[in-house]
Length: 271
Length: 94
Image 1: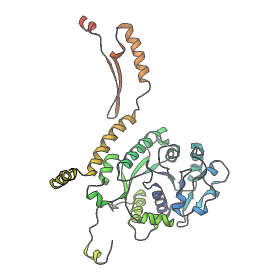
Image 2: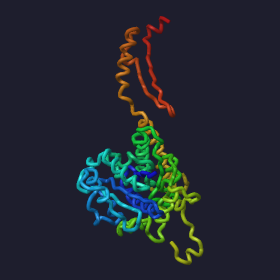
Image 3: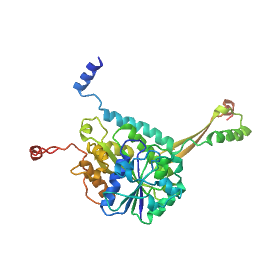
Image 4: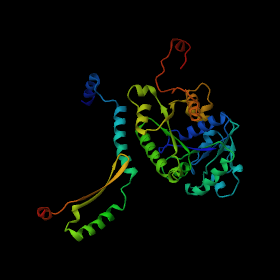
């Protein structure tokens, strides 16, 4: 059974596309046939983060309108064999994305993919709604910051009330909290909400914590999802997220406390 | 002045950390927003109040202000609260 996962947040700039790119790459690296769809019609960016912007010929709207086949629009990822990208349209407006069309595409994708990752646009308008409507599971990307937490709560309310699963009376969308841009140092100083605080407020299970890191910008500069970076805590953190999502047990939650540098690590100049 | 006050607060250790303030603010605003979200004030309330008014007026002489319909949330269930204040004269007759 294939699964539809929405990466959502309400607020913009918290790391939805970064997460969509790394999460879908991680799923593919573990041998799952995966497709990642950009739902941000008019402001597509997943192609840049995945480094395939120059290979975009057709997009999701072309497929919905029946102008091209799904196969023609899918772009094979340069880093992972099992990963494909379906870009958003840059020229059309978001109303071109209708529920019937999206459902048709998802059903067709389900025939050949294990995981369908939907990168939601920010906000709670039609684009974000369409991205989450068919979801089986949701990664709710949240920064340790008041406006992001509030918007995540709003999104959780919409998932619980207006998603297809809610409307059809099926099991609810399985929600996962992903805290990004986390800085344990500032948390310890009392300057930043802790993971525990956020969990207590949002009341959904935590799937991972992505530390604040310079490497995220470097990854986007290069058009390589952060999960592929060498010796990067962000890459490790995303691999943990994928592991937990796939049911790996006994993965400790890393990057939540300030790392105490050991003698050898200091000697060797480790970060 | 505020800097001095801040410094004194800091030295006393009673300055509230901003993360604590953030959490408290979120808890308050979200409790409020969730209450409004689960059951957005149904738009039938004014009509319901109006119709109840008509029925009750058949038997008792009351003003518009003495009838109050409210929907409240108590944990997992909603309570429809109906409050009718009877006129003084009626109460005296009892």
